[in-house]
Image 1 (cartoon, one colour):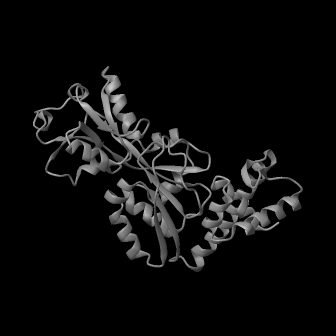
Image 2: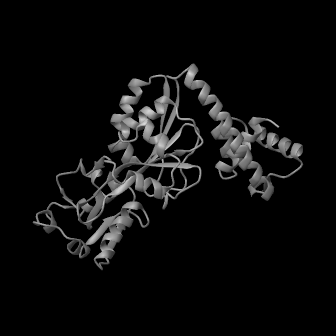
Image 3: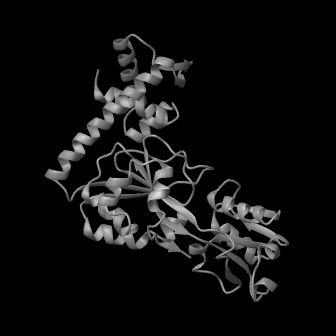
Length: 323
């Protein structure tokens, strides 16, 4: 049994049991992976994957257990390498940041600029993730961090730390009555055709909960996760929009922004990574630059807490709030 064989079966699972995609991700050949999986199955005397013709459809029951154990062994290997690297080459390494387009565009540039200047020998990769309904498809490799402005389901091996808070704002065509109204209420907004985030996203949940508490049922005419799409339809006069306030800082003159502070509660954004990775100094440094309340001592004290424990611990901590 070889660690490389274990790595292959783990990556096959991570890539939806698609050997072709796995080979591309690992920069190796598809026949080579298939051969090593077959050799491992022969050695163990069991079938790890179910097969339909030449294609894999998923793990067998025993295969699920084997992949789980293999993943734990590979995590130990990663930690051993990381611990050694923290002494032998502390200024070198890798860091993969996965986030949404909006966060990458509006919130991360300063932290990324600082990090690249401070750690020129660390390979920094910025990847985009599209927010799903609950944030359950986050990368969790040894160098992977995700920053998401959506709620995340609690998972045993996933560290989730509150990174910042963000508010929502109303955007309307500048000739709309709400652009110059002395005050804006949820009742007024509910009478309009509304453009905002897709159902079950964190922003949409906060919006819908605020309306529901007032007994209001607004009409959504367009929903999208891309704020530029929402802005475009508002500028066309299709309806009025509600988006994250941080995305309103560069608006055309044809759109007016109105604060919804006090009408819709602020939302949390989360920094997520695997609890099993060994955090290098440069990783702590990046986190604290982006979220100053997340110092190394705070992370070490809270990273293994449950979500309910985290919320209680951080309730009196001053988080950055983007309005």
